[in-house]
Image (cartoon, rainbow, N blue to C red; front, side, top):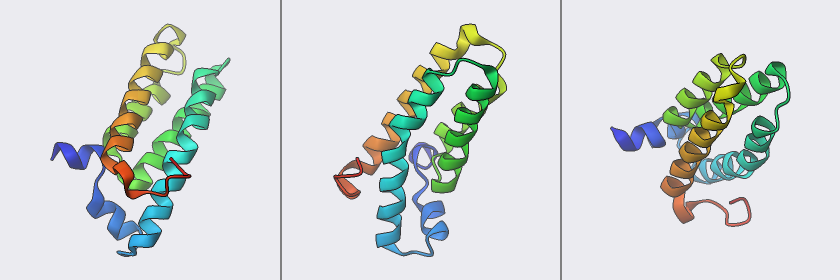
Length: 113
């Protein structure tokens, strides 16, 4: 079950209708976009910018079945007014992204990772 919290392959297969090539493309896009989105979160200067970045991560994570990452991003989204907690939340998000990246391993296009 812990593996499914990191990356639910069954969810992803349903999302991509079992198309392995599409799964690879979706995961590559997801992982490829994470550094920029996390940087947006880290650089947020306002609660509005924080919410937008956290919401983006949450939605992307839910789409691919990265439930733990989605949960952390949802918690971050709800703490938009708690700037003193932002650094810790970004660290947690980066950790969850790292877990997803490790779970994906070498299965996605190397250029996207």
